[in-house]
Each structure stands twice: as C-alpha cells, then as structure tokens.
Length: 69
Image 1 (tube, rainbow, N blue to C red):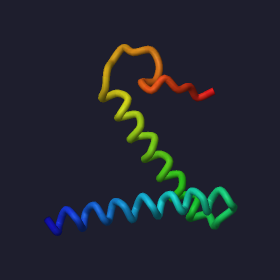
Image 2: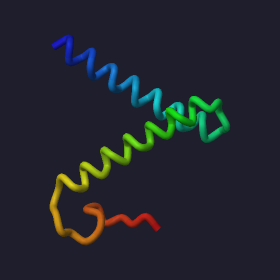
Image 3: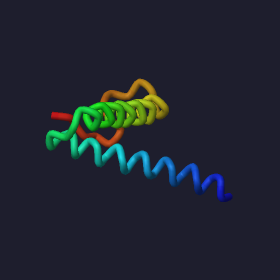
Image 4: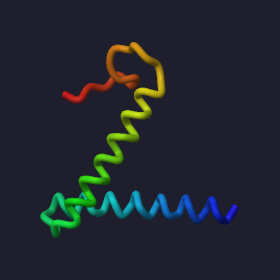
C-alpha cells in the first residue's frame, strides 16, 4: 500500500511541477523551464491522444462534442 502511495505522490508532484513550469515559461522564465514546459505539454498530448484512440473508432469528431475553433 505504501509503495502505491509513494508512486502516486511522485506522479502528482511531477504533474504539479510541470504545470508550474508551463506557467513560468509563458511568463518568460529561464530556458530550462521552456524545456520542461514543452515536455509537459507533449506528455499531455500523448495522454489525450491515447484516450481518444482507446475509445470508439470511426467516430467523426470529439466524443464530448466540443470544437477547437
């Protein structure tokens, strides 16, 4: 049980740290924050694309009905 808690805590800290770097980089932070922000946004896109492809196939558009425009 405690190992699961440690792993989930580490994942939560990485996610919060990545979000903080995205905000800091958007406000003109140092170059390393831009690298971490890019990695965080890329990981988010991977998660979103895996959620989309894991569901129904052959659908036309997003499952929630929203549009990007």
